[in-house]
Length: 446
Image (cartoon, rainbow, N blue to C red; front, side, top):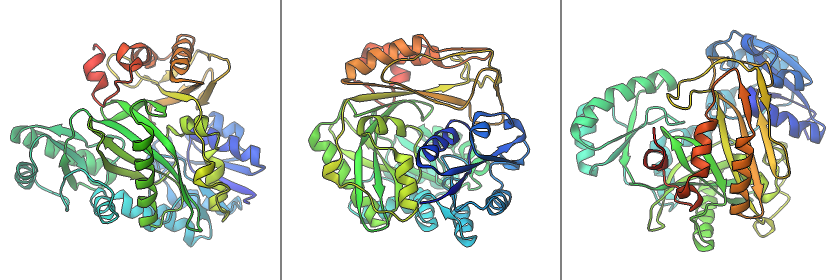
C-alpha cells in the first residue's frame, strides 16, 4: 500500500480523501491556491503546498507545478478527486511518465470515454443500449440543422468533450438549433478547449440513473447498486438517492450486468460510473461513463458499507478486489443533497464570508464539508461547499431525516440553496418517487 499520496483537488472531496487516508495510515499532501490558504483540506493534510494564484488556471490546473510538488514531496501516487484534472488524459499520462501512480483508469480509457462520440461507438459495439444520435461530431449550424431533421426533434445538443451540463441544451425546432448552436459551441470552446458538438435524440421525461462499478487489474469487475440522480437544475444534479425508487430487482440486475459488460469492453480499472437515461417503459440507454469518483458516491457507501476511496487506493496499489458480486448487499436507503453557495431564487453564486455554520447531528446523518465557520467562499471555484447525506432503514425514514436535517442546517453570511432543497425533498411528487429530470421545472415554483 502507498505510504504517501498527493491530492490534486480542493474542498470537500480533498477532505473526504484525507479522511480515508488517515484511516489507512497513508500520509497526505495537499495543494492549495492563494484563495485556499486556510481551507480545511490544507489544515487536515500532513503537508500542504501553494500551487498558484486564486484562478483555477493558475493553480489546480497547473500540471507541471502539481507534478513538481508531487516529486519534491516524494509521494507515490496522486488522487485527482473529481473535476479539475480528474478526467484529463494528459495529466494521467504525465503521472505515468514521472513514475507516479494515477489513482484512476488508464489515460487511454479516460480519453476514449471523454469523447461522447467514441464512448457511444464503444458501448454500441459492446452491446450496451445507446440513445439514437450521430456517429461524428458537428462543427457548423447548417450540418446541425440537417442532422437534427434526420434524427427527429426534440434533440439534445451537447459539447462532445463536455460534462457537468455545460454546453447542453434541448432544441425542438430548426430555429432553436440555429439560436443554440453557436452559443453552446463558444461555451464548449471556453470550458473544454474543444468546440465540437454532438447531437442525440432527446428522451422526454426520463430518469437519470447511474451504476457504480469497481474493477481491479485482474479482470474482476462488480457493480454496487445504482443511484438515482434525476433531480437536476440546468442538467446539474442536486439531489441523489440510492437505491432508485423506480427500479425493480430485474431492471437493477440488467443495468448492473450491462455496466460490467461496458467496463470490461474498455479494460476499465478502478472506480467508475456508467450513466443511463431510463424511460417510462423501463428501457435504458447509455448516456456516458464518468472515469472518476462521483460527487454522489456517499449514498452508495451508505447503502453498501463499502468505502469507495479505500477501494480506489487498493486497486491503484495493485490489490485485487476483496469481494465478489454475491458479497455485495445493499441495505437501507440514502439521500444526498448538495449545498451550494448560491441565491436560491436567482441561482447566482453567493461568495463571501460564512459568519455562522451550525450542522444537524444524529444517527444516520453524514456531512462532507469543504468549509468551516469564517471560511471565505471564493468566486473562483464551483459554488458547492458541502453535501448532506442521510441514511434510513427505509426510504420513508430517510425522507423524514433529510427534512429534519435541512431544517436544522444553518449557514449565515452567504446565501445557499437550502430553501430550494427543502422544497424539493418535502414535495409530494418527490415522496412518491416521481423524480424525472424535469422535476424542478414541473413541480418547483419559481
